[in-house]
Length: 59
Image (tube, rainbow, N blue to C red):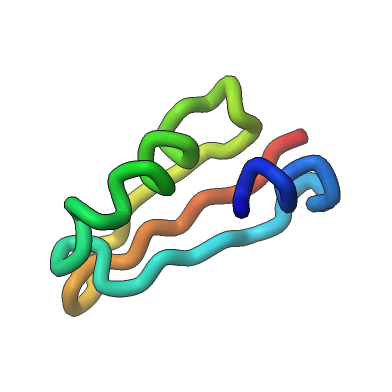
C-alpha cells in the first residue's frame, strides 16, 4: 500500500505504526520500506509504550 501512496504524499507527510515492538515480525515488509531512505522516508522508532515507528516523507 505504501508503494502506491508514497508518490501522492507531500514532503514532510507523516506515517505512524503503533505497537512496533509487539508486531515487529508482521510489520517487516512495511519497516523494510520505511527504513530504506531511497524510498523517500526518514524513519525513527520512538520508545513509547509498545513502540511507535515515525517515518517522515522527504520527497
